[in-house]
Amino acid sequence: MSAPNIETIVSLSKRRGFVYPASEIYGGLGSSWDYGPLGVELANNIKKSWWRWIVYERDDIEGLDSSIIQNRLVWKYSGHEQTFHDPLVDCRDCKTRLREDKLDRDANGKPVCSNCGSTNLTESRPFNLMFRTTVGAASSDEDESALAYLRPETAQGIFINFANVLNTSRRKLPFGIAQIGKAFRNEVTPGNFIFRTREFEQMEMEYFCRAEDAPRLHQEWIDGFQGWLESLGLSAANLSLYEQTKEELAHYAERTVDIMYRYFPEREDESKQWDELMGIANRTDYDLRVHSKKPEDAEGKRINPDSTEDLSYFDTATNERFYPYVIEPAIGVNRTLLAVMMDAYTEKTNEKGETRVILKLTPEMAPIKVAVLPLAKNKPEIVEMAKKIKKDLQRSMRTVYDDTGGIGKLYARQDEIGTPFCVTVDHESLEDNAVTVRDRDTWEQERVGTDSLREYLQKRLS
Ligand code: GAP
Image (tube, rainbow, N blue to C red):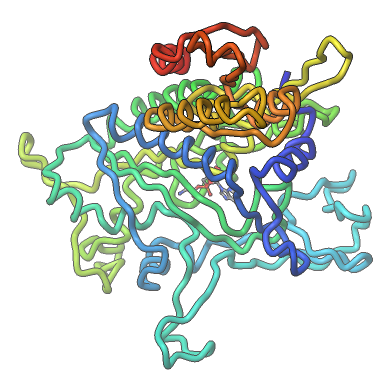
């Protein structure tokens, strides 16, 4: 089982402290969300898993953390100033602002307003998605020389640092550079909770290689990412691949495959249940070329007269100099978090006929690994023992202590937030130095001695 719809996750998130509407006490701000105590842990677990898999478990990838605000020229030469647009239309009848390329068409191929069904729409016009800002104390909003953008993708920070990383890490092709960080897009139609927002976080990796190796490596990353996503707990049945058509490809891409997740299982039409979780693109040598000072156009003019660096690669084995191709797997932290929560969501009925929510997160994803619960909070010896166990476990795994309710309520709360194990300290524990360990998924309980508790939990969590 997984969540029947996104709304179920919105309400669980608010109720238990995963994600809250941003600026809520001032009426909110469309499509902005804040990550609460559990949400920040889950997001960190996703990022740690990605970084470990991409950077630590391989020998050919380096990390990077580049600036959100860069020289405006980065976005001129990347093509974003010219082409990072969405086609915007307004409905003349209900005044809704819409993204034309996302609208259904009527029998004559005319776009239909998704709000009121009218086809009385304005002409489509391009709307640049980059957030503008000004840099420097004396600048005014109109001062073009002070204009800067919040980055709309983390990728460009990697391309402009290609020579820096290459030279300092002494890498040879193929190798990659990985980065996690915030990106900003002034989306025309944000929505569906944290699926499409104006501020979000990306995990991107640019894998530099020779042109002839690019198609094979592209396929390897597509396969690899499906495996990694499944390791986060996503079921294969809720993942699918989508090959972008020639018309859909970004200006820099030769081939892009999206990994789709079933975010909308409630929709009758199966084809409308899916949306993009991530994209894996073969960006060719486009990016390194456009940021380099050397390449020339057909008339012999430098295509980039502003760059001070040539981002080509010299292969000492073949004595060749060329611009490497790039394979780019790009995934959003927020969309991953939504998919992980949806897939983990289950309901179970207890012997009293009450339905309980269980978030079956993998131990790696679970925000809290163990909850230590005293059976009687008015008995100081039990409380003391429970707090001591919490302190001891905390050194090796995220552990919480909770005595704010009866044991049934405490179990239910931990099930709902995905805590794999609850450890209960009872009257007997004071005599036999043992505790009850309860499994989130089976509700089975086992008696374990406090001396071996840490090793027991570590083994079951790994
Ligand atoms: N550098 C390539 C790139 O940025 P993209 O497909 O535009 O490609 C990559 O973005 C991923 O970032 C998406 O697959 C999605 O997971 C996430 N993403 C993009 N726009 C987003 C938004 N407005 N809100 C949340 N996540 C977003």
